[in-house]
Amino acid sequence: MTTLFADQYRHKTVLLTGHTGFKGSWLAYWLHQLGARVVGFSLPAPTQPSHWHLMQLPITHLTGNINDLGSLQAAFAAQQPDLVIHMAAQALVRPSYQNPLDTIQTNIIGTANVLDCVRQTASVRGVVVVTSDKCYENPEDGRPLTETDAMGGYDPYSMSKGAAELVTSSYRNSFFNPAQYGRSHQTLVASVRAGNVIGGGDWAVDRLIPDLIRGSVSGQRVVIRNPEAVRPWQHVLEPLSGYLLVGQQLLLGNQQAATGWNFGPDSADVLSVRAVVDQAKTRWSQIGIDEQPSDNNPHEAHLLRLNCDKAHQLLNWQPVWTTQAAIGRTIDWYRAYYEQNQLRTEADLRAYVQQAQAAQLIWTR
Ligand SMILES: NC(=O)c1ccc[n+]([C@@H]2O[C@H](COP(=O)([O-])OP(=O)(O)OC[C@H]3O[C@@H](n4cnc5c(N)ncnc54)[C@H](O)[C@@H]3O)[C@@H](O)[C@H]2O)c1
Image 1 (cartoon, helix red, strand yellow):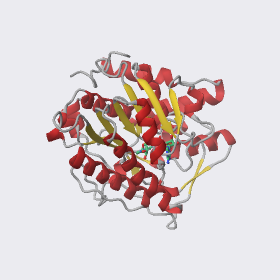
Image 2 (cartoon, helix red, strand yellow):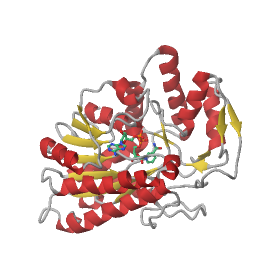
Image 3 (cartoon, rainbow, N blue to C red):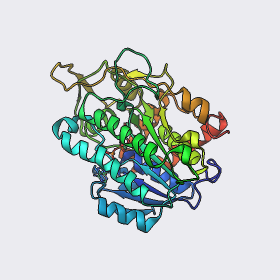
Image 4 (cartoon, helix red, strand yellow):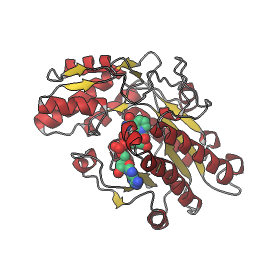
């Protein structure tokens, strides 16, 4: 696995915010496998159990708040990262309705804090800011959203991700302009936008798969409020491979990579919530749901599709697993955890990488 990214990550110091979360813990593991010196900077794991605690990764683990500029500056100064991957966020839509200011503070000002630390840390060659497919103004007209579409966001979470994109592009234009790269600065800044990800080890509240798993292990039926909602589901390893490809290009000094990138499933591979549940049930029959569509739910976009042509053409990135395969892998991960006390993270990563290599889907250029 170490040669996949042309050894670009070996011995590089990667400062990863949000490493105690769902996506961050998978990425910390993958980076560690690639030989990077991983420094995580995050609040404690947001769930119990947590993939982060289960994995027991031998990385540098710093507990800190991205809203505390002083402790963030101290971490940057002490660790001198080559690459920064910024994932820490209030990552859920519903809590953003309950406490919008907290979401705004962490997702917008927190992102500005990270970028300002980069401004003061000469070692940093690349920054990957993780936002979301929800960063876009979404007219819900069925057209897949492209990287040049306007930023927006109906609910506070989506707006905070659109605003984090604007913060990122402003810092890129003002302080890390690709046209000045190698002259007035040495840092390339990109942002990455992915949709709903699934995979083992997510116990967040109010996400479909973790809700189904919780219901399944406690013998309770799960209320589904938006069965018709169509989303671009993908395994967590899919966007992470894209983030790693972008990070690699930044480390190589490719100025074209210092831009926004979409990472989503193939356009035909989007499923409704109901279809995801049906497929999950074929892997674990004890999953049970009650559909209760309601007009009183907070607004959620019903149709969200990403156009990923740019990543296909310029990064040679392609999804490796269909949504169906991703659902199967995910449910199998939880079954192995609950029924055999086993973690399938290593097996999933190995299978993903082998399949990507066999199909020459990623890392061939
Ligand atoms: N999971 C998804 O489906 C999905 C989809 C699109 C985008 N994203 C984005 O990907 C990133 C990771 O998402 P996730 O699903 O792993 O979320 P998560 O909630 O599992 O993890 C969030 C991480 O951020 C940390 N964090 C939160 N507030 C912090 C603060 N103030 N200071 C320091 N650390 C803080 C948490 O401790 C945790 O490590 C987020 O930026 C999220 O918005 C996630």
